[in-house]
Amino acid sequence: MDDDLNIMSKEEKIMSERENEIQRTNVINKGETKLTPIEVMLDIQDDGTTTARKLYDYLQLSKGQFARWSKTNITENAFAEENKDYKGFDIEVEGNVVQDYKLTASFAKKICMKSHSERGEQARNYFIKVEDIFKEKSQQENQLSNKQNAIAINDKIFFAQQFQQMTSVLSQYMLASAKQMEELKEETKSEVKGIVHDSIIIKDQQIEHTAEMIGIRDKNTKYLTSVLKEKLSILTGQKINARNSLYIKIKNKIFRKYKVFTWEQIPIGKINNVFADIDSLEKDDIAS
Image (spheres, rainbow, N blue to C red):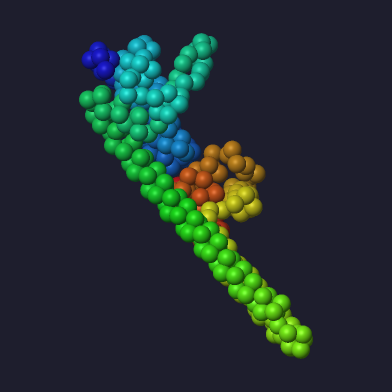
């Protein structure tokens, strides 16, 4: 990165600090979010991404040099891959359509390492934490996938054994003499019923076990969001929808508590806990 992009005039730094402080104060005073100041200024999304222009402003780089900076650090960066580390998109600024870029947490961290400034270090440390969270989430998903694969393999082995056992029983039935046929028929029927019954019970147990490891599905998601909107509507005395800032604030608070990014990721075993959290909300909770 060119040194002159890291240098701002004293007056520019003072103005930028004032603007950022005003923005943080307004957001916090309105109670619109529980995000940290750096998350607000970088406009961090649920997937941990930010944009090049938000990062450029946060690093307090020279105004009017974004195009040059983005060319050096993003589009012509030999170690950056488009649609993997970044993705370009158009935005409108003061009536003009300009280019911006969505940056992954990993790529944003690498850019921050080049800034050699206090803000660059703060942003770098933040994106390292974001990476750690997503790595942990990925490991959990891999563990779940491995468990599901193991269940699938066990299913195949189990049913193969059951089929072999049933085949053996039926073979005995077919080879039996005419004299023993009626007696063996009843005995075989009972054995087959027992095998099928045991197979169904074991399979049901495996399905229930798998369901406990999988996140909330559409039905539970819709019910959770409905319960939260209804609770907030009662506390505020006004109709609350999913786009309401209070709804978003309480939703994000719940997500952070259970270390997830969407309703679907909340484990089945934690659903009752989430319902209890929503039910216990008081006016002081939504005012804080």
